[in-house]
Length: 351
Image (cartoon, rainbow, N blue to C red; front, side):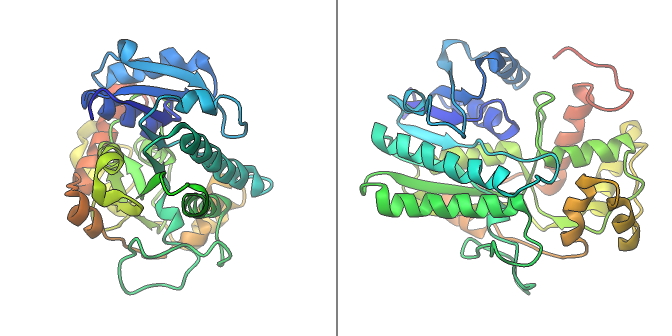
């Protein structure tokens, strides 16, 4: 119901900020958790870039996934919680627990606080990472019945963290939710779409590096794309739709793409801004060679050449979710990077 108070965790992040935008546009009041209250003006500026002056409809609370402090205050008087915040390491952590622990324990902290405060439903941002890894190749698209095997071959710490955090959330609601707390889970693939500021997802970094000419060519990688605006709308739909109770939903726009397909779409659509984009697919041995001195490249090695796909049939059927196309969300990403002056040699523009 419009006017109700919703907590969005991690409001300074790419998905979190778009969730706040969508909620405000729908007439909700929003409270958001940030690790430091010093980020308040930064978040408000991101929302202005998105076309909304939040004013007193948005409030802030300091809370960290690694600590119990602040969470009871964060959920107080909230009807719903969108738990979006989750750690994503820029490099391979020295120990996987550096990312697994805050992801899993943070989700449990939020769920416990939500239960104790009488929140109706928590919507958890999980990931395709919790669905499509550590398994033998499939001859069908992945769906919501599939789960990543955290003990499978080449399962990275981030993938394991999303899987274990989501499983822990389902176990908590089943065993400690007191039969009242409801859960819905959104599992996005690579999240693209309009950037609101310099804090954005790792997926966006791919488009930025392609457009900056920072990649000599395209590694043989395949992944799904989805527009952040459609991810945000799915979160808000999952919050109140009875059909979303105790369900998980894949957020994927369409067929999975290779990086070279992404590069060719951007090259075709972005005119002079796309002049640096490489459209040659790199042989795997060159990528492995480059990985020797680059931790970011090391993270992608297990997925080289692995073709996957996923279906959004369940979200379309139960939520009437109708996402933007792959091309639309990729072009929106690139256009926003140009508009905000976030590309090499581009003038830094005041938002």
